[in-house]
Amino acid sequence: MNNRNGVLAPWLQTQLESLLNQRGHAWLLAGPSGLGQFDLALALARAWLCETPTPQGACGVCGSCHAVDVHTHADLAMLMPELLTIELGWPLDEKTQDDLDSKKRKPSKEIKVDAAREVVTFTQFTRSRGTTKVVLVFPAERMNGITANTLLKTLEEPPGAVKFILATEAAHQLLPTIRSRCLGHTMVWPGFDEALTWLQASHHQGQGGDKKPSKPLSSTDLKTLLTAAGGRPADALAWIQSGQAAALAQSWQALPKAMARGDVTAISDLLPSQAVDALQKLCHDVWSVRVGASPRFFSPADLPASPANAGTFGLAAWAKELASTARTVEHPYNPGLMLESLTSRAKIGLNSK
Image 1 (cartoon, rainbow, N blue to C red):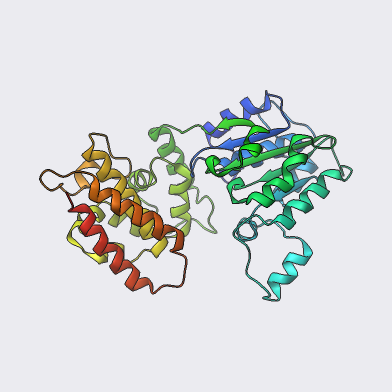
Image 2 (image 1 turned 180 degrees about the vertical axis):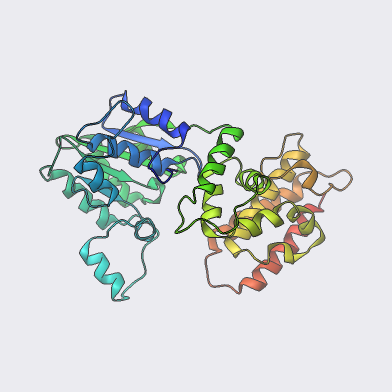
């Protein structure tokens, strides 16, 4: 959640300065998706490696900062799934790159144990510059038990001046032994108005894209996107960067009542994974309203009316089915048939008592 001149979002900058004032060799940055865990983790690593750091973070102009910016710093190890490493533009090791280039296998969506072993070896090498080495793990929940245990001893007693930053969107999935060896930091959830102001500025600067959008989104559309993201600005920005924001903003308010009617056209432009995510949010909000709470992802006026004497039993069954579908939605099913099935089940769930 940096803008083009490298400035962090204000709520991340505040957290960065707080973390820099504290001691510790291993931090666990935890919170739901869309709050900027990776950006905060990288800014913290950048500050630790900087040749002339300030209380506000890295100087941004030294050789170390430049090396981080171009993803070549010899004292920074990025431990991420191969697929995410490629998406974020970080280099892979030579053997992995050769395997992927020769089509021997697809990039992994998990953090592989071999990569963790390489990180352990990395911590034992002499520093190439500066006074510390940094290991950044993201998303930390993508480590399976074997991978996590490979890091455990080094995480507890790193050799020399080695620091760890683990960033996660699902801390409950981490091994208790991993959590216990880190200092915890709960990500700050920005206020809606603050997040909206940042999103507007980032959008009009063309953040994260190759060029400025030909038709900027309106303030109303941006507000709709931020609401759809549950107030999480990085998730809203990701939609903008994907090029789907305009279509999503136009259809989001009509989606709940369209699902209650069984109208599949409301989600026909979405990928199955995106449709499942939208329906999980809809199920959450309808359930919230039925138990007297406020919706998070939709306006109350956009939600369909509940049937007389409506309860939550039908919604519970629907929510369970959606959770099960989310685990297999990336499989090569027929997208059109899946969307029709999701719509049919949504209609039943929304009209159930």
